[in-house]
Image (cartoon, rainbow, N blue to C red; front, side, top):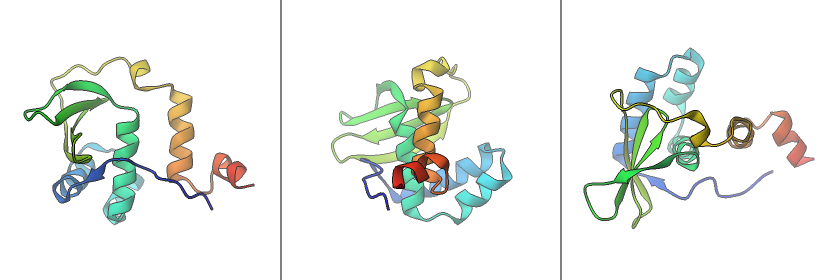
Length: 128
């Protein structure tokens, strides 16, 4: 079995609550809504760290140690000193930067398979 650290940042209780609430509102897939509703804190932390992995630097936060990162239409507020993700929210008014800024599509899909699909061909090839 693959054992490695999925993420560097740890979610706060506030973030987990807001993540479930906001993703159910903005995600269109019924399957993904069901997965998000039934997932535990570790699964949600993995999903948040996946977003951070491909996010781009947005702007400094309100406090000296905070930073707002952009992931497509989402703003993610992180504290770099304590390595915590404070909150995330959907930003409708800001124009979404070009897709290529968030990493190569095939690389994003490959890492998604490794992190969230244990029965995928990629994960099975790594285990073999």
